Image 1: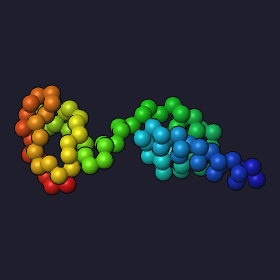
Image 2 (image 1 turned 120 degrees about the vertical axis):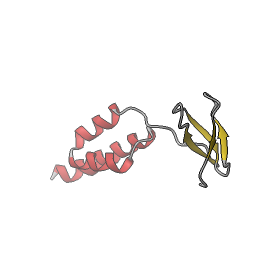
Image 3 (image 1 turned 90 degrees about the vertical axis):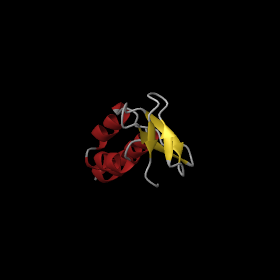
Image 4 (image 1 turned 135 degrees about the horizontal axis):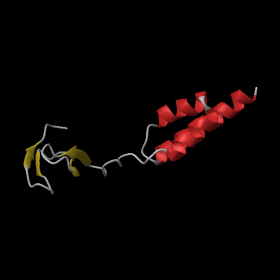
Length: 92
């Protein structure tokens, strides 16, 4: 009976922790639901994910040097800040 109460509570806690770290909330919710205490511990120990780009921007990776950068969403090309390569983008 306690599994029915503890499982969803740990799932919500794991989902919240993962969401604050830019991780998959749904995946950690399921992990916390199936393995309550383990799911919360794994969510606490998980490394932070890649932050989302600011509003009106999109995250791109330079094909030459793999540098991550944010460019305006409507921009069709950019110059890499690291290797100075001119890159043409597909429409968003």
